[in-house]
Length: 263
Length: 246
Image (cartoon, rainbow over the protein chains, first blue to last red):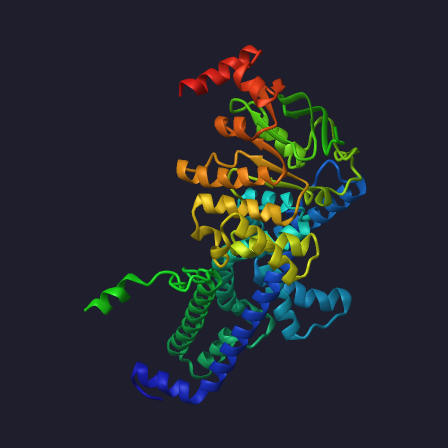
């Protein structure tokens, strides 16, 4: 065992590099898949929770909607209001004890992260939808769009753009929070690090490595999502569609470029 | 006289304890241009929004070709696609380009093909002088341009009646001019329009009929000459005298 800190780190990486990488890979996959499914759940729940009820609707429809909304609210409140670690234990062991259903570890991991993210995303989506100017809905209604068409073509694309930062937040939180799944035996980065640390009693070094890996993963994800946001915003300029051959059709030249040309 | 497209019978609207519209009666015939004038808070916009069912009337009926559209069984989106609306704040779809704004309704509501929708959209965008800007997003064009696109969007649905809710109130004088120019053109082409406006000169010029509203009640209605030159109601006289002074 080397005597310096960095020496020991190099030694650990050489010896257990693949364990760390596999752990990191599991964390990342669980986080990405969980966030994605969670977003889908959140979208569906958020959309259902914002369906307007008017007095003109039939009683059956109103009662049905009220019941569905109440169930969804309960889902959101319960999963937001209890720790994911406890949920993991409860669901993983509870499914086996109560329903004699032995989940695979992977299924449990995806299930728990998704359903948790879904609960948070539901509120985020609801916030995204109500943040859109009511004028957008009125504009769509005025040309005869149904609630569903308005949502798909007008409101959701704008709401999704607005909640992108929050989706990024959730992804980053999930990358870090996959470590609670170590309690049910998923060998993600935290579990892997703990094993490595315990094997040679090198807690400080092993967790230094884990910290760097976590940070690299979260930072890369946050930058990638920022790029995606910029892409969603589209170009700042637009092309004029004209048949006049003397007009420049490609918007404006950036000011700096022109300056450079004059020199 | 031809059959009325829209017939408003004893319409009333109450917000909580506030009565905004009281016993409104009027008719709109094909190719009519009806202007609704009156002070702010008189219920003009609410009346227009009731006609498009953006507000639910509390009482009375609105007949569209004889069918009461406040009835529960009426296909509201289908009705709205035949009665267009232009808003004070444009309400263009921010996530679509100028062209997209004029196409999405045709594709989704009228189930037209993309090419058909594009052709129609281009036709109306050309009419309002916005054909060059089809690739722009709403945030990239001026208020007057936005309103012209909004008019093209409404026209692309080829509605029977077009409702204008203070279409120039959010614009500076130059932009007001360009929007009114487009509207004048539509009047010439015989489009049926109901216009809520504060542009008195314009209302006098283009309307076939003028309705003066105050406190949720139609105080006086008649031809532009009757209302603007020989008003009989004291409130109308008072309201119009303020405009003459200004």
